[in-house]
Length: 328
Image (cartoon, rainbow, N blue to C red; front, side, top):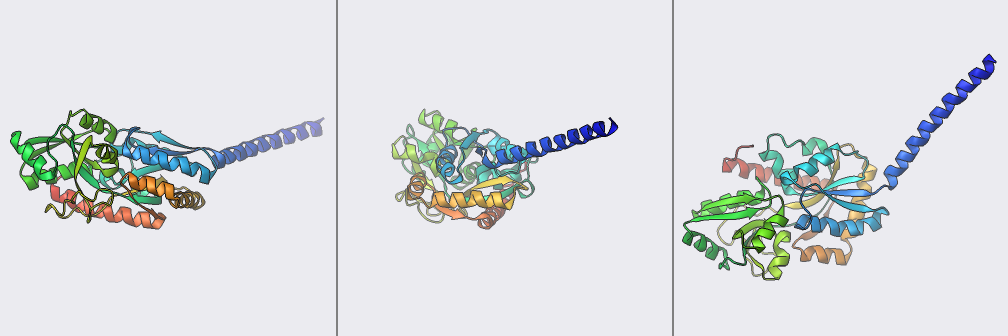
């Protein structure tokens, strides 16, 4: 009887261990085959969201699993970044971000809730782009000089929309105001989509954002891009001058787009995502589509993206310090 009971206890213990191991194996399998989610820090309908959806549609074929875009809009990408930090480092969650959340925001917000150097790991980059000044359809100006003259005729005060507070576009508004000796005020939005809605409705006369934010409405004649950052004119906007041409030097460094994963994500998972992205970008239709959106497409591996991020962060650290901006 005693031996029988002991045997039953051993069998029960073994069964429990088998059940636990089985559950862990199922969980591991789900982690390997589950959907990949791409976090986006801005609302649906904006430039970053459109880019993410373009890539997600192609990545699913390369990865063999569903790839979904999850918009975590607000605070200039802080919410999405905090979501990434809290995500399991299993390769199933990545953050598609440009320079603002990764390079700028940690320098202008005292407690953003994340530290890119400690909480994230670069996966791969896929493009650079430039920011631009655009005027609304109801604004008579067709050039930067004409816009500044129009602002002067309105009493010397102008309000320009920017897609996020304490962003590169907001600092550019400050620089423009100083150069043209005008009282230019940045009006921060929760992403480019609501800013664009107000520009299209002529609720705001001008805005500063990325070329991908503006390009479709510029092509449609609903707004006008009048100047771009960067060291040379954009192929998609050959008639639009750079700020350097207009006498505003020091803004040639180009921001970037990349994918980031939670710290601790295994190298095998990083490599898998990076390889998939490289294959997607090699597809002519994808490259052509992203180029038409105003991006300069080019694959950057993990190390190259890390170097690009660090260089850009250092450039803007100097500009932010020179502006006298105090972290909020």
